[in-house]
Image (cartoon, rainbow, N blue to C red; front, side, top):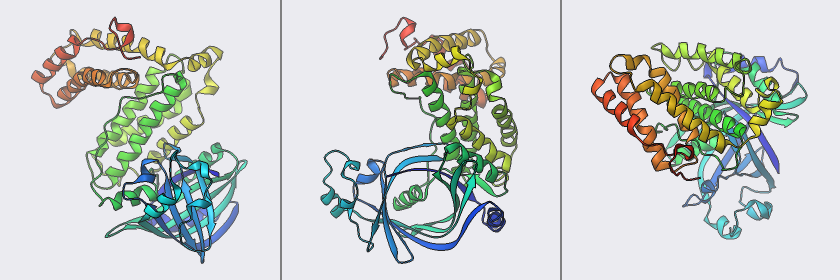
Length: 436
């Protein structure tokens, strides 16, 4: 087994030659382009997908390799997941060559192999550089080709960084160098994810609402911070992809993502000092200014500053860039349970909303919209330990108030303000019983 750690960039077609020329200047070994053909397999009932696994056979220069990638996690486009590779004599599945322990409990491997069928394919030219950066060796692969499922296809034009040996920090540092080049942007969707989508008939990708954050009960405060930032960054990357593909309303979801990042920094601001995030907040401010203009996706997402902002957040999150700024007391606070932190802050931020909106009416409501949006984001991050129907209903009234203010509907705004102020709390320290 190998632990795959990789980061993906999408490359503008007109920028490919200049990017390759730059990569040739880096210290390391260059490999000429080779054609790779890949077939991905699945069952009729999506057994592998349901278990967060992907299976393929790759052919290159008459040699074949079978690969399965099992459940891992993605933080801001940085993929980390176990990967198993087996050499084959021919492009024919042989699942018994994988370690038995990788399969879900109760899986009949022989029957699974019989049920598998080709689902989609990827064919591309791969040019590689293995470079030394810091204390690490990193493979940079530039892929150009297509992913195809039945009558549907999509262009592949991307750069992947994969850690061969060393540390994740060096991968991110090298990514920062590449992000300074024109015509690249951080990507989220893997070739496999795009192939699965095409195999479904290439339906329109829907907007995804920001969720109420869910955490295991024993999670630490720091785990809450990491999860919140990860939700915001993945939300940004997903909707950026939609915006690039022509969904103009998806830009609003990117703005919401930045709002959630800022709300997260406020929520944890009693532990993490502002100086820990000064660079990140400055970059977010510039990006918000860019998004506030009536601009197209093409004029924003390929700008180096836009890519560098996302990458700065990825780096801050993956390396826990706040820790060097913390004293022993703050570090102990991060190790405490998030459940108690959530209970205390639900009461605190709910009280803040009530103080603000009890007497604010009419045109004055619009002045309070930034504060209301921030507080709704914060409460979304804190409500995951309770009954989700109650929590969602409680949040909905405040969110509807946000919408009414944005739309300038005074009657609707007044209605939802009264509804929101009148509702009973649902969390433990409110005097009400909650699920905990």
